[in-house]
Length: 267
Ligand code: ADP
Image (cartoon, rainbow, N blue to C red; front, side, top):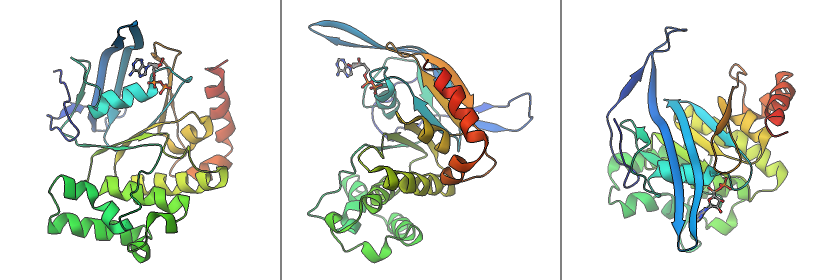
């Protein structure tokens, strides 16, 4: 089965995976198989990705790291359907939401009007969707700020509002392209903890691109390490912290071991 995703939100069929070793039934939500990708311009071809193979199960949080220019953003853009490819991956009956480095909140709209923007554009401002937005705003502490303008909120709250805007469309898979890189270090730690918890609570599958190895370990169930361009998967590291939050993980004794293992991939 091979598909091209033409736009965000395309529907596909399910693909079941039953890992032999655990007997646990897991659902593959995204399968990337032998994916290659090159950019073409009048100056020639730039091979960005080669031989990418990855299966992501429902509810998993995948961190993707690799040297600058190795194709991380290209990979997310392909999965989002923004960069069309002929074959190489399938998304199984899932919708996709994309969260970028900057929050892109519009100052001329209130937080509430920003959060419902996607629903408005897609003309799906239904009672059910409005209820979901209200629940998200209330649950994640933005209810009291819904009539404020973005400039009246802290960087962390703005990022939370951007996440709620993405969640308002109820995507199954969230693509996060360095979403914390515009924040200062302390805010970044708090916001990544916050966003990581929200994604887990909402039971979403997530793929996070980051250049921050600690962040990758603090947030991911697995860390995918890409090689230099053309990016290919050099290693996949399973991360297991038994239910700890991203901030708690950073203080756990295993954290340094994971960090060294990851660091060795770059040296
Ligand atoms: P990363 O996100 O890992 O920094 P990118 O996915 O942005 O890497 O880019 C991978 C490679 O593809 C880089 O060498 C980049 O210069 C090149 N590239 C990215 N976008 C384009 C484009 N539109 N046209 C040509 N080359 C591109």
